[in-house]
Length: 133
Image (cartoon, rainbow, N blue to C red; front, side, top):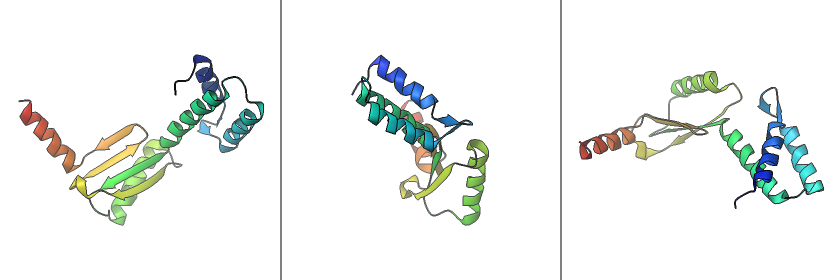
């Protein structure tokens, strides 16, 4: 569903006001949603949809998915945690997943950031180079 310019501006304004000290404030988010539900302003559903999308994207920035071909050892997990916390802050959540198709290496996703050092991707890149050479 395409949202109107006014609804997008309203959602963005509400989103920007949902932060405390540079971090998304859960209490403010609840208040915004409650007030929108009670007031039901013009373009209410579009504003809620836009606001929800902004919140979803912000939460994705605070969650890392670390994929590996097999279970990582505790020391490796701790090293990855330290690196991600140093880059994104202590409040980042980290989820470790096993993805055998990677063959080896790691793929790390945080929001729209992706670091892919998997063997699967290296093979695909080599194939592309050979095809386009």
